[in-house]
Image (cartoon, rainbow, N blue to C red; front, side):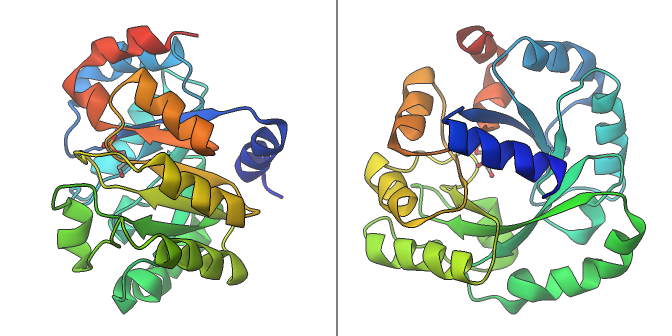
Length: 241
Ligand code: 1GP
């Protein structure tokens, strides 16, 4: 097992909850990197994820290089496209959008990324990505031209996650979408958690400590938060070490 996945796997086994701060290069001002990362370092965050749906060429490389100068936390790419792959990071979530039926995001982009990945020194973590409706139209849905799964179809959500595990995916990411109005319910998280043996990531629309704890209590092993920090960095005060 490679290092970053091993750490996530062990944390899950030991019941240690993980927190990733998501930075979208498209929405983040690089001038703010040092001040922002200082807050991340002083918080309970265990990982930094970098990625977005529409990011300019080279923006990820430049930003990850800058972030690295200020932190020892692992930097994990959460790419919306092949152009966001850079060896400056430590690992890459090799995402397959298994809630959708767009072949490009199930396998097509992956094939296109191989020549880049073969040159890159990145830990590659195969990850099932399940987009579930979160009360707003998400950039992911628009860019990938896929519909999110209905919140009401819990059995379909469970079976999608389990099918991903049967396919050999090593992580499962349940996503309400960046900036979701409603984060995923405890019922959805718990139902999926009960079925999976692989670690579970949950993200989308989590904006306060109570919602974070609710996701953890329902079974999330790692929670991803982006928008809440983009909108109000004082949220870090609630998450001090
Ligand atoms: C988005 O799950 C992440 O892909 C985080 O969502 O930006 O709503 O925190 P937010």
